[in-house]
Image 1 (cartoon, rainbow, N blue to C red):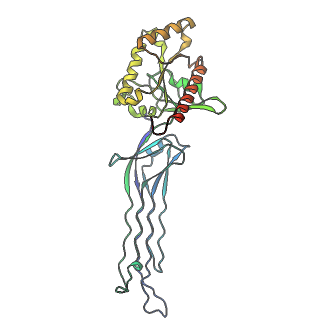
Image 2: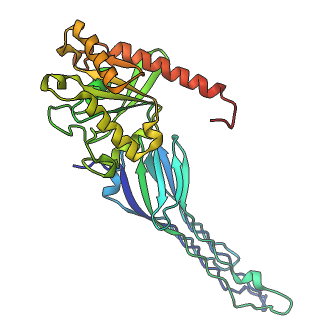
Image 3: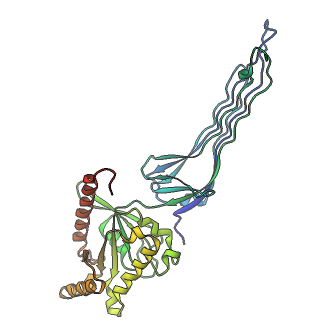
Length: 348
């Protein structure tokens, strides 16, 4: 099964209507002049960000969209009606590329954002415009121009404050269920998470942040292994990463430090900016360890990784430690927001 977070569609704008060749034919006016009207403009194709959508799955069933063509002009200088536009709803966070040129056409990041992806053709010109002192009965007109046609690549990147990453079955989905109202599927087998999940963590009145849960990473993910780069892109817009580690691996003689390094290797292969993003270590399944052993586990992992950043020991299953983790995340996100506001414009 594959989560549809990318899609290809074809869009065709409407052609402009043709200009009309016509002459007045009225009683008592034997020499009526030209009165051909102009053609109407063709309809355009627009993409619009809709907060009510969260996947690109609908584009599996419909891949072609066409706007209405403009109507031709008529006599009595009547202009043709313009073609109706087509507006296609897409999820917030949709990146749009022209497949022909690989040009990024736009990035729809807010509800209601619109992007014209195919401009309608201009209406043609009727023979009225060609009348002159030397050409009193012009029989020429100009046809409408064709509408634009494009094949587009749509890529969905979830918008979240915090991204969860780690190996399969590290407990990311369980943590998301524990701290938010999101209900991702949870089971004890690899790649339980096939769809990126998005949850809202509420700390208090007017205080909340969003969390994105992506499928577990395996070796070679940056080159497409497992669920590959389809979901690594969802971390690109997060401000803080929580790296979950399955502490139960110690009972299976697994090297937790090596597992952490394997995930970092995939992040670095995918994006240098992503591996440089602020990241906290979160050891899961604290309920399997006595309290006096938890501090020892944390310290040994710190030393093995030469880790100076924050480390938390939680149990996503029982909820132990999750409240302290979420409050710390909220404080850090608030600090980040304040730093961004205080930063002089134009500096990074």
